[in-house]
Length: 352
Image (cartoon, rainbow, N blue to C red; front, top):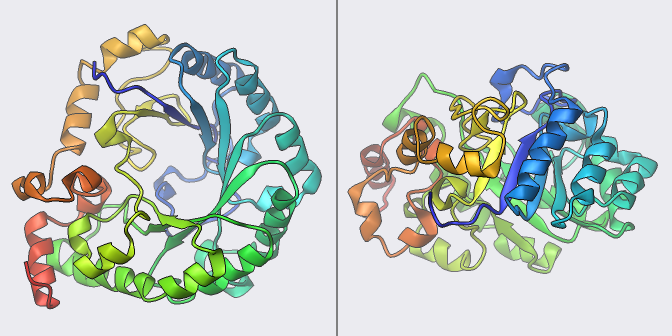
């Protein structure tokens, strides 16, 4: 097994969700209400994490706050002797209830990531199918007066990239103090590919639009923001990378082998984005960390992780940004090749 330490475990405790985000990576799962992990099974996974000396357990979905026993799950994580951190990735709608917020915090929740959806109710309706704007702002207000660290995150799309600063300013005014951004990645297989796909989902425009607003973003946030791992760094210009220096998150668990992910059926996944790649099932193929250590040396785990971490080009290993990039998120390459990206950059005035 790799000597890299497993630091994080992501558990999809439910596929149920109260929003329908147009950019959701798990749209194909159908948001089925009864697709959950039973509480006793979650406890077994938490015990596994405790045995593995994992530092943080992240509860996600779907929408994890819709899980019937979410408070009990948080309490159980915090009851283990290795002092694991408990975190939730949420849309924040349920957190508009102050008492619910306080109960989560009082029972030990350490960190919350709220996925903020838009600058107003109209934009939220367009993005997620309903007006959740006031509820999200109320959730931020609630968290801002409680003793918990939280981040306000946004997925940047061609629809909201020109207005996201308006959304962030309203979140800041409501009490948010740190912000993260992810450039949208198409997790579904598109009917278009290569140049055609890149023309339809132009990453150069997204990056340029975002970078052009950095000064405004810094004024709003006092500089407390970063960009999550997504596009390969060769998509950026040298000037853009200079402006983003120290702001780009490091490569993900697929490349670093420092995290594990379980879906709602307790299948082991490469990460939450790769819901189709099942590499073993907790409780059937392994139940202890020692058994997991054997799994990672065997197929399908080994072949899947090796395949997903394969570089899009031999040129990647020669790039000076290699250690910060590893070719970008593997999801980016589902619908285009490195060669088509290079051609696309040339067509758009980018010199190789």
